[in-house]
Length: 278
Image (cartoon, rainbow, N blue to C red; front, side, top):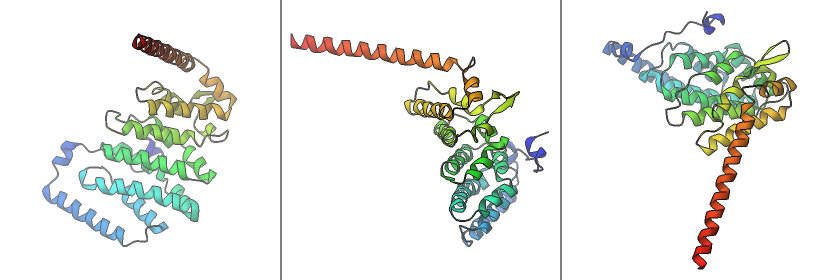
């Protein structure tokens, strides 16, 4: 059964470009009028309120396919939900209670499934990163990490050929790693007989450990150090087993090559200076 079916959510109907193009013109106009009215109604509401969060959630739940006509609303709704959750974290715990009650994490995952638009994926990654980085209440982080939706987002096949997608994704992974401790790390792993057999955050991150972009390499090293810093024995055994243990030898080889290249550069510079003196 599909994940959303197991959670009592309505199964999304995935649309395609061809389906959208076959919609009657009056349907497109109706959609535009509907979303225009939605935006007007939105602006009249108290922006930082439970009512606003309820309104955004209700409207997202009514969306069964994300396309050009409703894309802007979805993006803005995802952005606004992040703002509301951070506001609620600092001012009113009822915001996060509503977040849990309506299973908004599951709604995020559903929106990602029914959208093929890169802008929506980018905003969802940014929304998750902002929330994870800024939520101070440990119970909120525990909830976000305590269901499979977070691992679904970690392992989702984002299109990294799109500009900025990889940067947003790496920021998302690093944000998660910044909240790791002995309690939260256990929520992100799968165990069998007290041994870790799956740790998507670490496994997916290592795929970019030697990326050509130095900022991405630095972010991945920060993430791995955050994992090691927790000091969880079962996790340490997991990362020390083949093939994940190859990362350590690959790091040694990487730095060895950098040292050799640096040495060659120094020798070349010294020779150039010596020749210049003559």
